Length: 619
Image 1: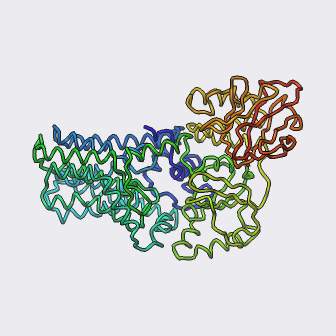
Image 2: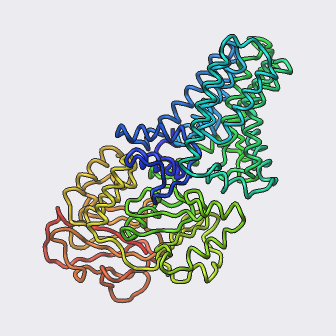
Image 3: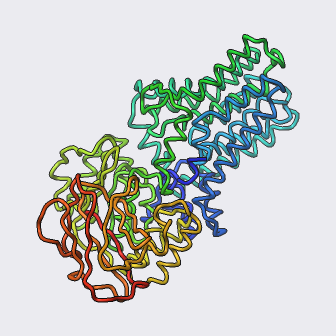
């Protein structure tokens, strides 16, 4: 699947908690604070077990998500009738773009959906399975916060949908007792009843129209599945009510939270799955071979899944695209990191002093960088910020955090996800900080401010990259930068090993395509030529060094490694004017919008081409 190469950035909050728990034995954020900044305990616990077993939990998260989606499809398929009716309903589900997207993205969405499918099918099925269903819904309640509503609704069937339970109540009582013990332990550990995610995402927000609009779009997106089932089957009124309960709970969660920035049905998908499987379990099918008109209507509903994808952040936006949610994700995930701009990760790894603290907007993989303590100003991983946001005192808390020079974090990350133009930040926020990096991408930009210009030494950067690569061995973007860092740190043998392994694992990646030769600077005078969709490439005989360098930026070329020439011996001809050549190493060369070639000239003193490496830096 096109989404497979990447893991969405928010997954790393869960994975960071899991890795830290497995390695330190303490369920806390990397700053040492006991804060419940995740909202998927059971899923996170599975990842912690994987980390304890020394598995690659980045890949494990994707495998669990993918396996859960496959099992949910299998459960659905076993309850469908044979013939065209069942085939159409199954095709409608497997071609549903949100399911394809979330099944490989690494979040708990499909895992939670599978638990709801199993739990509600058991609760609404034969009475002898009711207790097992309550047990599964109890597991769902520690996978997502809104799962407790499903458990309460499932327990209410004991009164509102009375049947003889035949001894299954004991299993349900045991499940509820274990769940109660879990919450007692959770409250004692975190010293708080409500998790930080609730304080940040739900409690300060009143009911607005955006969640309702997004729910409408999600239901349109799932129209092929739900419509096919309704056309082909029927249920009693009592059963129809209970079938709708899972979708109603998930929809109410979306509306109460005033929408979800991670659209494509992340919150409603589990409810759609559970309601669809419950319907298939309880329906009386009208006919195994539908009449022509019924078949045509069902076929049209399935066809809409291919061409109409309602999406948007708080709005319903119909666009004619064929499974576009999955297709679009590929362009953002080809580096293995679904962050707004992956270079943001590499910059902080290379520039945050060891032991520095950073006050950032959003956490993600930045929270898993060794030697860097991340404080999330949105409160997800910092309880004081979460409580201030819930109480409407966010600015007061932020002012107090940055006003004291002795406690002020050394780094400040501000992001604008909706455009490259940042708002005018208040002077009290930036007092004592200076702009260090302005990273721009198609949809917005990220700015890093710092109170210091200090950065790790080359050996410290190489060691940090080694640790990052150990934690995330399946990401080519990180592996490539680890190779570059090893070269810069004077360890060409390790750089070649990483690059060679990367070329074997990711042969289609532009960075590794020519590895390890792509790390070498081998001849005297070369041309840096624009390569479409790759940026500027330094031609080395028949090999190329390719880095993402765009017009309107500034560039310098740095040689490192044993035998590399001095910076003064390397010059760049200015492509934007007739000015004299600029010495590299200390000077930056502007790249004008019309430039298509940069001439790089090295002094003729010979050097060891096998151990000298080139690194293209941008500012």
